Amino acid sequence: MTPNLKLIASLPALLVLASCSGSNNPENTDAAPQATANDSKAESAQLLRIAAAANLAGVLPAVIEAYQAEDGQNKSGQNTDNQKPKIEVTYASSGKLFAQINSGAPYDLFLSADQDFPAKYAQQQASAKVTVQAPFTYARGQLALYSSNQDISSTKALDRASLQQLFITQPTQSNTAIKITLANPELAPYGASAKAFLQQQGIYDQLKDNKKLIQAENIGQAFQYAHTATTDYGFVALSQLISAKVEPSKYLILQADSYPAILQDGIVVSDSAAATDFSHYLQSEPAQQLFADAGYLPVTTP
Image 1 (tube, one colour):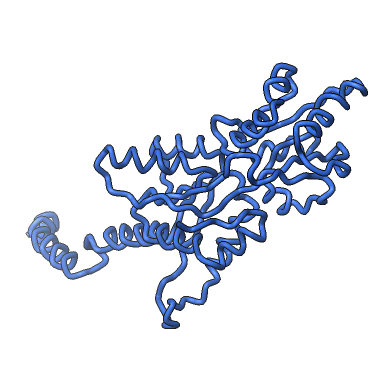
Image 2 (cartoon, one colour):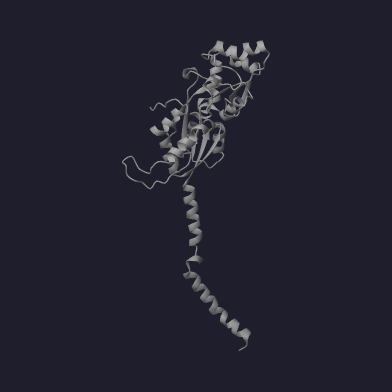
């Protein structure tokens, strides 16, 4: 038999051997792709994606750190295997985050700066016959008037007379153009409360007509405008001032009953068990103490 014929005759036997060898070798089965898929799912389960209102940038990192540092024991003191997930946070205005969630952004937990957006989300899901967890209140924000380039240390209280003096009378006498910033009232609850405060004092329309109001996208941007003296004054979150270690002489805290309460709600927007666990922690005594230290008012539990 010629060499070529010998090779052709041996091919079927080689193919059979290769087939048998492949079926007995785990590395050549579908197990590897399946394992990769499982690893990917496990990695995703250990990642918690949070959409957080901009005002939380000063306190949420500390809350997350305390949460992840828990000793892995349950309330009975028994050890658990509950490994804390990696947490990624996106900060923006509540309205912008709400729009992103409605557009399919892959968040697990939505922490708003108000109660309206989480309630709207829950209502939307109910209309679509999708079961979701109820919104929960985790913080109550405080408003402050801040200036990095104007002296407000002598102002004892914020009322119509003092605001008129700060924003209108005094600048007119010195021929200085005064600018005041507040977050967009349509998107940011802190901005809506600041607008309501100025309206209650009967000064909002006058400031708007005189083009003294500068609208920021969110409370984070409002703080930056005031902090960098882009504007002379800014209605900002007290938590931002405490986080930035601003001297108390540079700001005045608004009376809590002088503007609509800034109750901040959150809602779980995925089936993530980690999101549910973290939502419970936000309402716990250790987390609430961190919020209080950061300039938030106590949350009243019904």
